[in-house]
Amino acid sequence: VPPNRGVSRPRGADRKLRRGGGADPEADGGGFPRKRLASFAPRGPGVKHQAASQGHGACRAALARRTPAALAPGGGGQRAESVRPSATLRLRGTTTTIHTHPRPYSAPVPPCFSLVVGNGGAFKRSLLLSALSYLGFETYQVISQAALVRAAATVFRVEEILEQADYLYESGETEKLYQLLTQYKESEDAELLWRLARASRDIAQLSGTSEEEKKLLVYEALEYAKRALEKNESSFAAHKWYAICISDVGDYEGIKAKIANAYTIKEHFEKAIELNPKDATSIHLMGIWCYTFAEMPWYQRRMANVLFAAPPSSTYEEALGYFHRAEQVDPNFYSKNLLLLGKTYLKLHNKKLAVFWLMKAKDHPAHTEEDKQVQTEAAQLLTGFSDKS
Image (cartoon, rainbow, N blue to C red; front, top):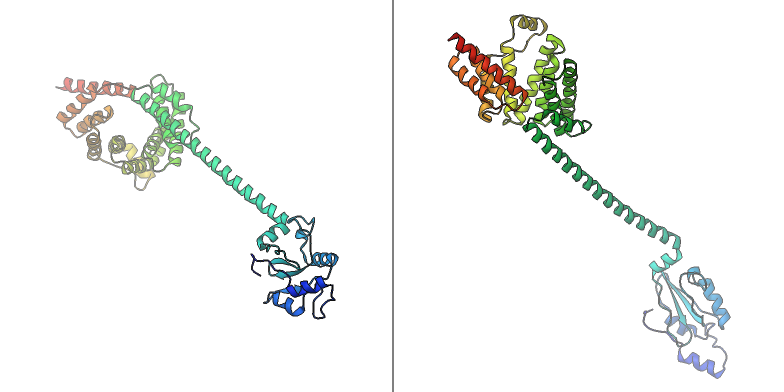
């Protein structure tokens, strides 16, 4: 049935009713001839036709049987209108009422509306779930944004601490640097941890540090360096300071442990150089490793041969190559590198070049306690040359 057209009774049926005549033997209960009523009924599968009986009471009973509970008077969903004599047509998903007097029939009920009205609990649950999903998503966004803000603030804070630490290190403020960094000894940041290892070692080497405190600081430094390496294996500085701290610990664990640790020390120095070929300190330390095993006393060498199938070994020439390479990367970066260049040339019996580098070491500005010790040793070696001359 078209949705925008009303259906009225045939004129013949009206005339019979107005004349007071009897019902047509071929008419249905509402005064419609069966033949004519059939012409108004929709055809096709799924369509049923029922005529209303005469009178308002019969119509109400017919509608009560056919109308869904949600659409009945007081049934909740759709307000029921006053019922007039009519025929009820049921299509798939729709309910259409055809009145038996000139009046437009009620509009078809959309299937989705009938579903929602007829199942209000499911609709409410769906609405509630949608609202909860939206609120959950909003909460997730807020938490994510807050986490990002906290992470950014943490990164900014770490960068600020590192800047302060580097300034204090360059200024030679060893104790202040150690006090600053020990506040963050529980940090998970590798950059903070290896700087703390360096600071602990520097405090251990101060002249005012007792032997007992020095030992504690050396092992403490090793622990910080180890944690730094665990947090970031791609940090060249973590490799470098881990190797330095292992070497320092060897002084307290005997010659056997010191020789055994030599392989590990060399491995981490080489890794540090690989990660950062422009770091002069790592190159210098590899030179020290070579210099140490080149001048190893004969009794230690014999012990190493007994304890290890292939004990570590090196030469002064190899050490000299690393010291020069470090100086090329960063000229005058470290007073001890200048001193070791002079001492290596002495071992190779090159007095002229030995004096040249020892003079540079003696004249190097003293920023740290180690620089002062280097100046003293270089001056003593130069004095020895003068006495021999």
